[in-house]
Length: 93
Image (tube, rainbow, N blue to C red):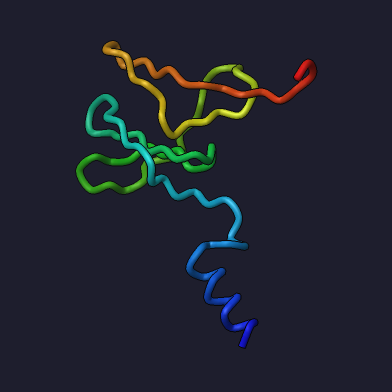
């Protein structure tokens, strides 16, 4: 009985599934008919078709910023640039 309850608990909470690519936190408009969907996980950043919400591709970052990108809540400037916070738990911390 305890095993069944634990399995139901795991199913309801998602425990044991690891990191997913589910982009469910923030959606930003991009140029044209594209959207950027983000979540706390860096594997959960996707470019979507704004008309049908199909995934076009995983978002790719083109810079050399090192550290953990917390991508779910960036700020978008009027020129379209995104600003975000990066944490790096390396030497000196």
